[in-house]
Image (tube, rainbow, N blue to C red; front, side):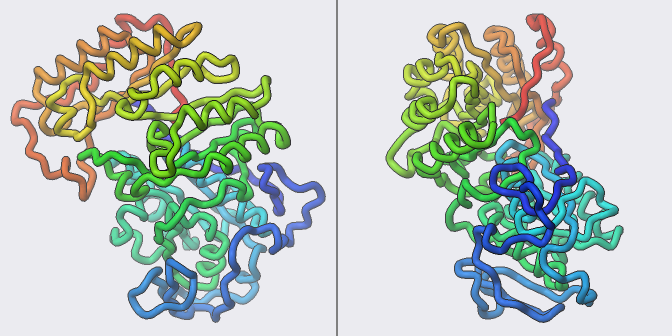
Length: 449
């Protein structure tokens, strides 16, 4: 099973530019002019405030963000930009990018980013809701932070998709489309307020300050949300419907980081890269061609996960782009099951035969060959032994080198969580794993994207 990314930003000096590198001679005081956000009016410590998600203005009770009263804090600890923040991110590369942006915004304002919880005034946890173990570990971090007496702020897909969770009732929340307001949330939390920004309007800008976990790798979100309604997926509750960034904004970000900031790899990411542009009248191959035109010859482009229905109609164009010398010949296409009946219950909107056609076409038409990665869910409620045998047969037939295997987890609020399980079902993750060595000559590693 593929591990979730879990990163802690290392200590960095205050005053970080959008390049992901520290400013030379930064004095730690911060520069309000470098933070791309609207400043909030000042409030007294412990004041109960309601904040509108849409405008950031004072609102009536129950509208927008919920705010509460926390314990009194000393005046010396609330001078903006003088405190230390610990940032931890779990989950996919889109989440990692969000965490990098939040760390960059805080550092640009003057906050110190640390990898030691004991040194931090504020603990910021950026969460993943895909699997139950990911959420459980996140909630464990939240409990630990409270026990340490720290100010705790949560972000990511768990609070966005389940904001009324009991363990999150007394912590501040940064919504997935509100990361540009993280400085404001930290300021209010340090004053003793509990604030929640959960509005979903438009994607954050791509040119915000950033601290990259790898200074040579830039993760560029090209869209958020998706067009699917998979019955097992909790992420849709958090990320919502498809919202694509403009091609101009994406291309300019890639140009900037590769030609001005020393980045050598660009990862394009989203919940489903194949859906890019369908809401704004364009498509993924058109975007990729524009990016390839601006990326230097000594930099590489890597494409993130795409679901089968949305690459199926662009196979010829995708094969052409992935044959370019500065594009990794790699694609992550989740199949999830080798049974059409189970895929239908999952509402995956493709067949096993269509998935096989995608793999075979790309292997034939991408110059020099291509590496395909896929995902399998074992133990979906309606999966029978016969269905599972079909999954085994599919993996053996296609000999896919990278297979991320996960057992099914009933996520709260999803249709699959209410489905009745097949009485004789056995979750055979270990059996599926045992199939892989039959054709693997080397052990493959997939960096989740």
